[in-house]
Amino acid sequence: MATYDEWFLGIVAYYRPLGFFVSPPFAGLSDLQCQRLIEQKHPNWFADQFLNPRVTGNSLKSLEDFIVQMDRSRVWTTDQEGVYESCGFYAQSIKSLAAIARGAFKPQDVSETWEEADGREFVIRVGFELAGTPMHLWINRCGDFANSGWIDMVNQVCGYRDPRFRLYPDSQDWRVIFQTDGDAAAMATRHWPTSNFDSISGIISYPPSDGAILRYKRDRWLYWHRGVFRYRIGDVAGAWDDWLLAEKLGFPDLYRRCDELTRDNGA
Image 1 (spheres, helix red, strand yellow):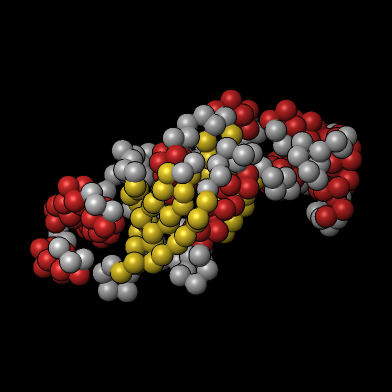
Image 2: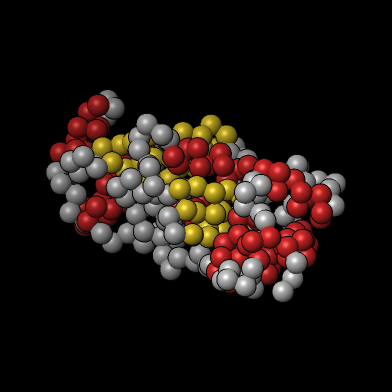
């Protein structure tokens, strides 16, 4: 069995070519200095007893993941639960994505607004500006959990393919990394779970993205709110496209609501 230092240094050496442990506070440090810096932050996690024969491979894998997550310039970690209007989860998350994107994602004027839907439910509207272009997401509330497809929607609306943001779920926690396909493949050999979703549900965007698949009754409110947005920016044809899709999903009192909207806007 490898000694503790050999095991730890092997992790640092493997991930550094993938862009980890190369930015502050690790920039300019040797592999051993990186190890010592992480140990100083979490001394109780790293000791020889983790390498005794009774430790399972899964335990060591969890500890390896923990080491990699210590590079906060590359990995954003969050609990997906606790999404309430008062905490601004999605707006803060947009800023967190920017912090790990190595300059590729520079959103400005980030906002989060909770808009009315059925009963006590809400549609969450997230807005930001990217390279002078306004971007908007409308997300169905999922209780107090974050929608698991919203990061892939950010990729789509921003045109990110390779590299792109990847979500690595770990029980209730998320780890998000902005990386190339090649680097993701290299991490897959270390048993990082995949995060590819077959579809994005409960989210739409403006500019519109082809990635969203909206087929459930509650999605009608997403189309309604995007239609209102498009109407207010002068895209009347686009607004009616959205409203008619909302009607197909059973949106209540569509034409009455549209009449009220046009009267309120002086049309």
